[in-house]
Length: 572
Image (cartoon, rainbow, N blue to C red; front, side, top):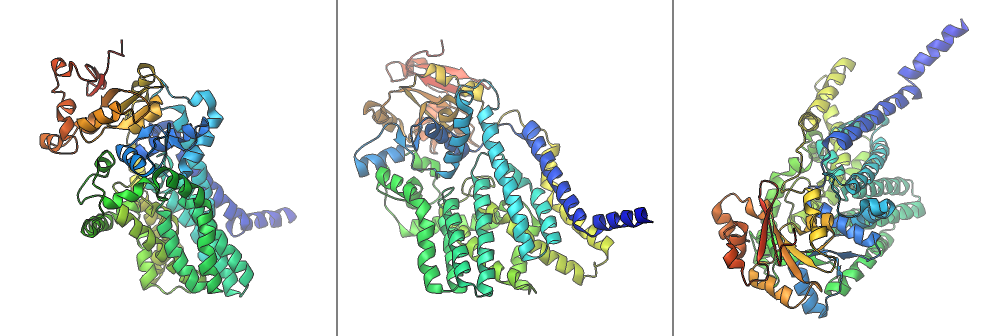
């Protein structure tokens, strides 16, 4: 009899008690581990985003004791440093990338030592696997914080289902293995949301001191998040507006939160000021860019016309706003559950005050982020400026709550029907992930980011020399050599070389399908590479090179689609 009672108690614990809750959590953890193992072993084929390689090589500079410097030289940065400070340090101070990603990479590269040095002969360098492993840890931590946030907003069951839907997002996995700092930013951002939630709870209970401490904690975490990307400033603007209205005492919140937020940003701002006499770095000058122009071409111009035109700024912002709106679902990972957040905000009355109040905080911060992305642009779903991904978890919680409410109103309250509806949500949300898993990954990322090929330049080019390239982020990372972004025209290239602006002679030019694989012939001869068109199209004869700075040339893999022009036959 006692055995029967004990068995019944055990079964009840699994069906209704904490044992069932932990079993569900264990299943979720196993799914995460399985997907991560699959991605590491089968899907990951190296970095493909330029900013990932750029931040990796900056991290190596930090790890080797050279400070926040870069091997990737942008002609625009050289121009601004000369005009504003009249000096060019060697190595060049980094003014384009935010410091969080490089700092995390530096820790990884320092720990790896010589095994992570440039010159790898492997298709996927070990350092990239290590960097993405750290990103995965931040992703796993973000899931844990997201669960706590979802449970505070709604309940534990909805939070667990929501975490499952986050895991089913293909986009979030692609970010995890991209080499970008978005997963570290997501961890900090979700922590800030949790701190804001606690501040609201204390404010509701009239615990003024606790609410102020928690709102300042949220501001500090947002400041640390902004170290991952300057657009975090726009998210803080939405946070500040909401906090000042809701959290008391308002005057203290209004004054103290900006101070706490700025504290971790001061060293970065001072670094940029010393290099450019501008605390916002090189990205700030994208505001001067002409409509329909290429941001990379703008950075390649050593003799730019820097004149702010209100009309140009408004045209660029309007164009980028429309592009962002048209691709919003893509930027949310194609998640219809996350997209339902906007219906939840405006069309649903939440019974719990936590969810009712917190939605406006999320909306204000998202509007700030969207405004920043409209000003500076987003070009791809997985890109450094894409910050919609930070809002994906909390949007999924709200969207799921809204869709479950609709299902209940449609009469889908029976356990079987409710389970079928949730299963349908999972199937729809995981279509892209399932497709990614089913497809065989390409052998390499295009243009050919092939480490064994690019690392040859570490042998052909000496440490005190430099090359120009159309993919300088890759040559800086894989070869560890100073790499100049191919200037706008040949005259600028010759000027930078003759004046010794890089404190190293330019001994070669590396061109790849990045510049040559354009849709049409006119795109090359009339586009940003028009002055280099004969080089890009391989129409320069050996006789034409005689007497020039780089009289030698050799075709390189894959299928001779790349070419290296040099001062002498360095490949022999």
